[in-house]
Image 1 (cartoon, rainbow, N blue to C red):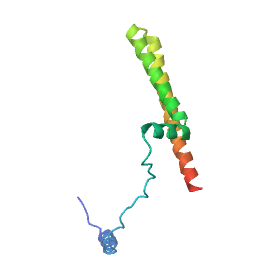
Image 2 (cartoon, one colour):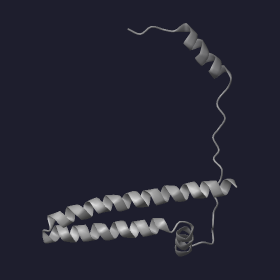
Image 3 (cartoon, helix red, strand yellow):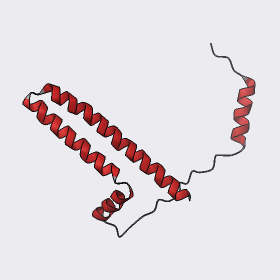
Image 4 (spheres, rainbow, N blue to C red):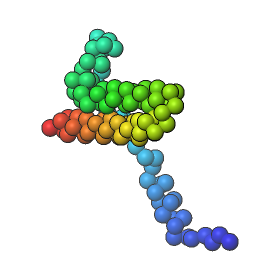
Length: 108
């Protein structure tokens, strides 16, 4: 059974009477219109070189694990799948670290 709370309803109506909330306008992102894919990739790699390295490691370990699985070497395949998870964790940590470093650098 639901009971109405008169004090709570008054708070809601007072908040609504103050007017609609201001519109959210995010700050514009920097754009590089003359920059192509290769230039952007190189710039991002220079900014945070650990992310592409982690991606390459993840793909390499995954590929080797799948090859081992196809050959029937289940023990090595399981080991490589666990190593893939570690490599993905490293890549994610590098990505977060790069984002934090960029945020700190932009505030200064």
